Image 1 (cartoon, rainbow over the protein chains, first blue to last red):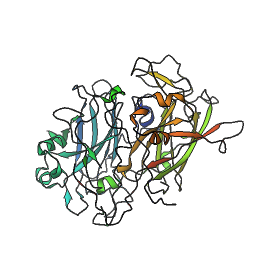
Image 2 (image 1 turned 90 degrees about the horizontal axis):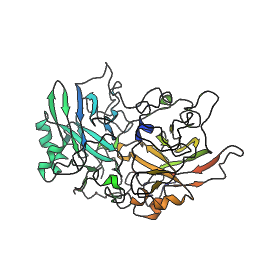
Image 3 (image 1 turned 90 degrees about the vertical axis):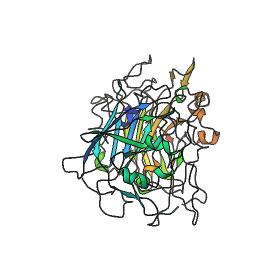
Image 4 (image 1 turned 45 degrees about the horizontal axis):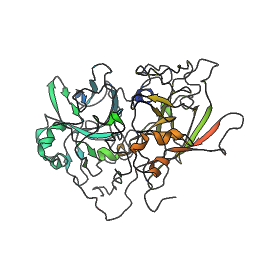
Length: 204
Length: 245
């Protein structure tokens, strides 16, 4: 039965410091329950597209890297298609999951994703969006998971026309959403939860 | 707002219903809460789509935390419980085929985690993780042992109420949610700064599972009912969402 007025969404609660138990038990040392941790491998040898590696840190308001966070990523394939029933423009690459999940290193805080450069996805009005990856960050101390986007510094023309980047105010904050190429397909993307370089987070 | 293909966007999150990013009594939120306002976006295909998980993912004991880490012939210690309910969206429709991941402390209040050092012992037969998929109507169920409350380093004498963590996937990444389920009657619920970060009492009450004697398995396990609501699509016609900060 459909409701007349929207039912309230269940309120969020922090993922807490032990999120790894539920989301990546093998990584957390709980072996033998699941054969592997979902989301830890996005590409196969047959995946279409340019291989890239994203690396970075999540910094708190004191500039210390988070060592207990988990990041999820969601992105289109190299042709801009998603492996989802909602995707009506064509069939996405069956060799690409589109979804990743990685921990921050418990000692250093660095995170790393091996994926492919995504294609273009349309904005609701049909304009192209620049290639981007959606990120979702959960951790102790984060009451509602944080959504942001990663764009690429070698897509300057697309970024300049992107309908979402063009709405970021002040425009100097756009740089918090741009991953920097470090050569050899590697991109650096650091996330700042607070401070002068605070990353733009979205209410999507 | 509808997109060029006629899809409706998702109802914006009610940020007065969710806990704010900064809840000073929950000390960990102080340095981890963004200070700038969130930038509101319309739902694009990047958020209207999301990963899909199928039954091939699941093993036969994934939804049985009593046994899924236990040695052969053994089982986890503690009160045996069945947790069940319905996953629906804000329009009241069941969310079918949704992956639910759960994790929890054992019956002594101890997590199996490298950063955890509480006095209570580990249970060699309890790992603390499980998962299931909702059925065609959005119903889910798993079995476990009742987790205990435990102390944590927030204030000088802070205790978490007994709880189970839930990670929920809807068809859209915009619906992604992690929350916690509490148990009816636990007096610690109303003393917890993580719970009390939620501004409204009725919102907290929506996270409290109810004892469900009708679903209890006699001489076996008590049942707890916990319904969960994910974001839904905006049903209002001709309404354009206010965009911008």
